[in-house]
Length: 256
Image 1: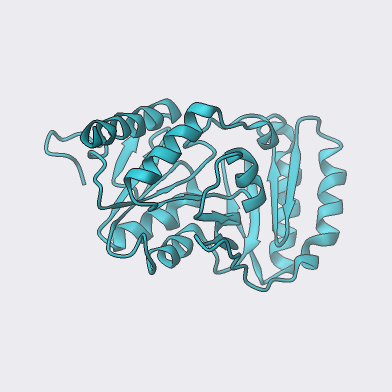
Image 2 (image 1 turned 90 degrees about the horizontal axis):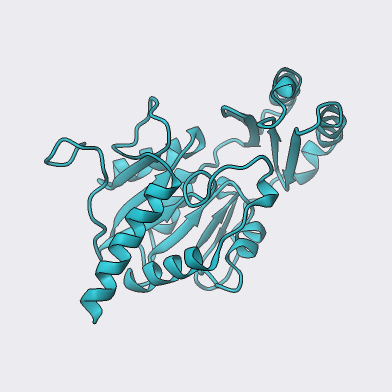
């Protein structure tokens, strides 16, 4: 789906949108260590303003945990968050809606992963409840060993599946994804009845793109062009922020 001018630039933000945003690679660039990512005050102000203009219908939908998202947003308090690709969800009431998963299932593999990354300086892991992320962006030589471990986990744990990325692998519960989280949020106000829009950058965002497409929404891929179900495209994080800021400024003028 292109604009009338044939471009894949997403259309202007409308007040009837429900806006869902990935974080890493979308609002902030990917860096060597995910724990080094920071939100600046300008980004927090932008998110707060967009949320106000869309009557609260803005949510972050991320592979990060909700605790990590809260830390990035602080002191801004964001009502709607989906963490760990939807394993965690929070509503405006502040309640957590986390399915029951066996957090101990990955325990032995976490130690194996720690032993592996110790052999490859720059490689790292993240273990959040029922999810395990293996990263080798800064240690490409670790890719083979960590991939083998991930495939061993997949064989041993039918409850989990692998999600392969360019610089790592995510291991998370089967049946949970960002599309499911978006569909869940769209049931209730302030999202219900609005047009869903999802902006993301990597293969883990594809279920989100598919979900909003099925609801006649708008899907936006960020970054290098690749095979995707997203219908629109922005080249990088700076372009995303410029697009959001442009329409946030327009909303502010309308109010004035």
